Image 1 (tube, helix red, strand yellow):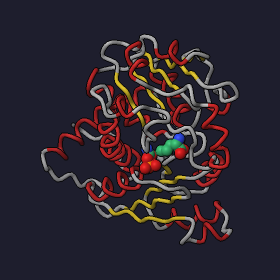
Image 2 (cartoon, rainbow, N blue to C red; image 1 turned 30 degrees about the vertical axis):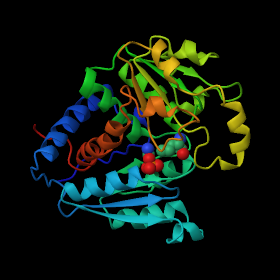
Image 3 (cartoon, helix red, strand yellow; image 1 turned 90 degrees about the horizontal axis):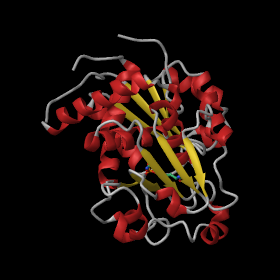
Image 4 (tube, rainbow, N blue to C red; image 1 turned 180 degrees about the vertical axis):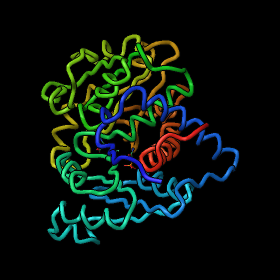
Length: 308
Ligand code: CP
Ligand code: NVA
């Protein structure tokens, strides 16, 4: 069985209707997994995972997920492959995609994964770039949906750096019709073009993080220094000092607000231990749901829609 070649390089690559299917399928796949029911639609299929940056969750969830679907996964990194020795992305894409059924790539510039996908014979999934992290937000929105239902019309408060995870929340807001309140220090504001927004007015910027969090359904943040920006660390520590999610901020959010973080987290920097380890935090569900959501994604890209 095969289907038209499709990639997942940024959140807006799929429509609201496709996400509705994927979220329903994630629930179904999670239930099968929790009931120890074997589900092997991808037997004989191979996922190649290319990592140009470090990872715990993304590697584990894709590798375990592919095995649980009956397939196999191969891990490549820059250090041990010819990718780190100057072989072009285009050549690598042509070769790797002849020997596999699907590729997941974590890299620096979005342009690199776009070029890889343009020369790939098989679906390519973005496992994080400097610009986007679509698999993370798919799992995060599923985490909201499984607790509260639709995210449409809800408000997400993003506190801190307008990074890859923030950009993806912003794209998701346009696709799924919710609102994002963003509060960043001066000089770190959202760049709508880099975020790939259509300009549909689903986000608002706030100078005061407390105002961004006021009444929000989800309060979320991320590390102040993302991978690839380590040289700016000292400067960022100073710039972001007032952009910490703490208990006072959670109190100003909606009464049943949840706290989200893609992890890894730095307690005492972007979030206090009290919040991330407290009752409103859903970070462990977010991490686990990477597994279930990405299994739905792999199945969708390789087989298409399946009856539930
Ligand atoms: N959230 C996330 O992508 O984690 P890793 O960097 O561990 O993959
Ligand atoms: N913004 C972080 C996310 C890590 C999962 C980074 O890019 O390093």
